[in-house]
Length: 155
Image (cartoon, rainbow, N blue to C red; front, side, top):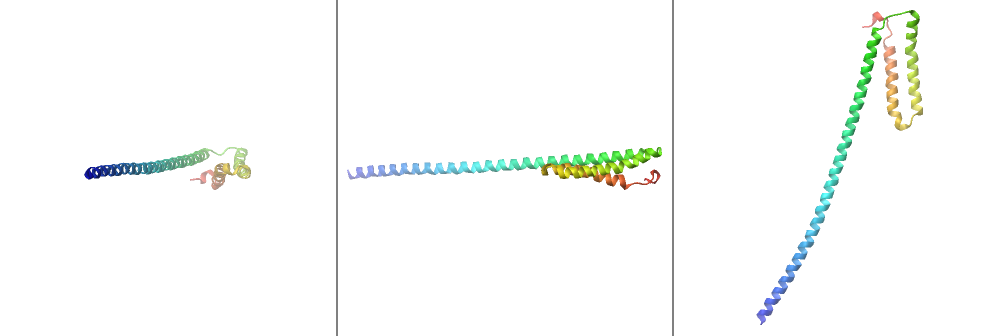
């Protein structure tokens, strides 16, 4: 009978340790799943951050491309204007005088517009508007007064 009690005690003890081992294994599995979920959440958050950074970079690149295209368009307009100016022949003296006064008046007007915009625009809007007005006023000043020689003296 002692052997039977020893076998029963061994079976009960083994069963308890088996149940305890299963419970500990399940508890460890629970913590592993929690860690895995936290890891996945961090990974997905990292992915979201990367995608947002890529989106911002693409938007900045698109904005830079648009600014470059806009600037190239400005220079194309200046070239067309130079070509049109070169094609004008001398006319009556009063026509030449009006044409001669147009450049200084337009230049003063452009610089006046630039100053008015600078002092009246909101800080957020001021940069783009002022850049455009300054470009126009500087182009007018340097181009219109850069070559004031006679038509025959131009090259």
